[in-house]
Image 1 (tube, one colour):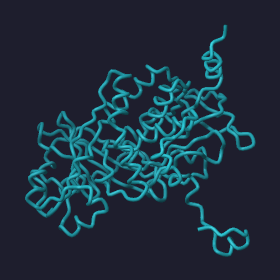
Image 2 (cartoon, helix red, strand yellow; image 1 turned 120 degrees about the vertical axis):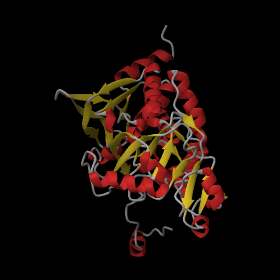
Image 3 (cartoon, helix red, strand yellow; image 1 turned 45 degrees about the vertical axis):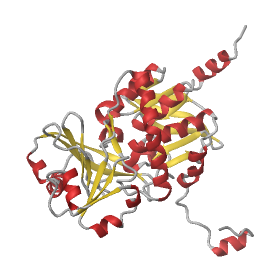
Image 4 (cartoon, helix red, strand yellow; image 1 turned 90 degrees about the vertical axis):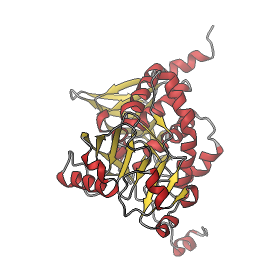
Length: 392
């Protein structure tokens, strides 16, 4: 006799949910869907170029000075991180490198500190307290904010590895080295995708649901999306263990200490670089100047690694979440520099949407703020009169 679960399994085998992008966001969404019993296939062109490998892993909605709906989303996601990480570590058996280090933001004056958008969420530090928190800080920093609720996760060396293992444990299927060339639609309904593998072979994958989380490349599949790349260069330094206890979030430069003494330094913000690959002398000089302006002694710490990548940005630096212009295609892209922070909430939201589960009230209330078409011009008063509808 056929059990209720069997028809669902057969349907899954013929039409899995496709995750278009194998970076941090794609893996996080795939893992959450798989935990709900969905069949999932992740399509990834080149994992190393994903923003999740590039970011410093700060969990910093307050230190970043976010505001409005973006701050609310960051706070909701920050609150979900511990349970999210616990799921990943339980499924993978690997650590994610989550640390509650707190983040210090230095300022040149107390007035500048008090005017910071998120100052009310932090502990005010005078000059003495600031330099006690960050020994060796450059002397011209006169005040600070300590956000003890903010922290970090070792996304590059631990989280990404653990997420991939957790996905495998939950039965997620991977297609690596495969590029999605186009979306296949009929009457604005998603039918599948056309792909090309590393050997140049073309293939068609049928599906009814997919999540577009291709980072800075998302607009290549759906050109109407206002997503563009912002290149960032970074490096890491080896320090004596315990030399830096807190994350330091300075203007244009941040220092993120890992538990083993490695310090991640970032990041340049090159909006005009497009998709130009590689390190540049100008970018490395910018990082060096940023280090000396924050923590002069760190200039003598030996460099360990240098890398670069592309942040997926939108005009207001907020993500694109939820439905798209194509029925069955969901969006989870454009997180800019907050992808690691917002991965937990985004994964939950996408899993709800794709599986038909009711969205939690706190996330549902924010979803309208991150619709993909929020940048379209609003109607003028004349347009409203012509249409016969008065809109606020």
